[in-house]
Image 1: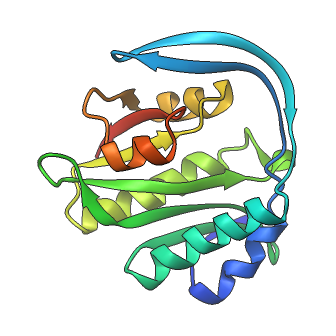
Image 2 (image 1 turned 90 degrees about the horizontal axis):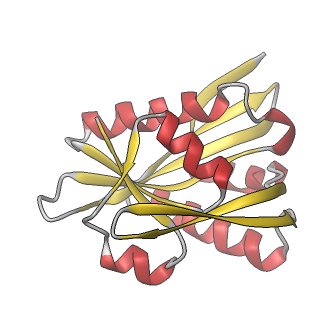
Length: 175
């Protein structure tokens, strides 16, 4: 049985349990709010040491600065997690970012990501946000997941996040 709970800073090492690998058949680009599909037959591997260190750093930074994280556990093993960033964004300063969101390969398509996104959404509402800002990886699975949860492409792209990840699909989800 999968259980969900708020993660603590001390839980950061368990991120290594996540298998982010994926077969990618399609990626998207976005121009003027319009998605364009591009075939892309390749395998995305699990995290290397540099990738893991970067994810760990982002996780710990957000939790140290007022962000929050929710995890999905199969017994004591982390099988999915999401991080809600601490900084409000947008022209109206009414958006909180989903900074990280991963579900282990063998646990995908079981509602785990949707439940984590619900937890992040509820926390964002408590904090006063009206939208989630999502800088989604450009893969078909990620874009379709966020779209199925009610996210839409945004024309108000966050400049800082776009500069960090220019290939991402920038979306918002009304809360």
